Length: 122
Picture 1 (cartoon, one colour):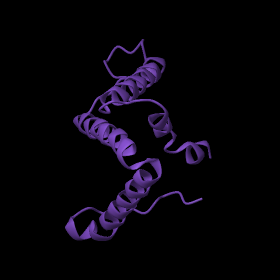
Picture 2 (spheres, rainbow, N blue to C red):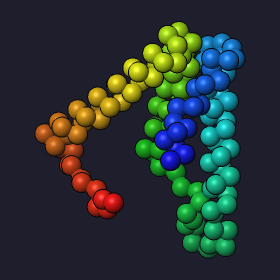
Picture 3 (cartoon, one colour):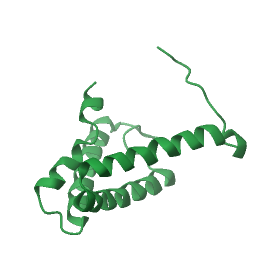
């Protein structure tokens, strides 16, 4: 419930403060995300593990690529909010997000992306 109410609230400060070219805002956002992730990883790390396996620190190339795409989206999002406003930005953001998800869901099996229905439907 909290996530659905707070979704997108990270862009609200963009309207109140100067973000210049978006990089300063993006830097603060990625620093906060990194510190939060490192804190959680340090808490979850198994410090007594002898076989170099831990559930705390784990890195994959897919995670690095998606993180890079996420940060580029933050910069473009901050600039877009300043240019067109928060309401117009979120309309287009959600339209492309839902539209892309719909297209992948409908056309995905045609190009080799298997459809997996959820295993636990409440």
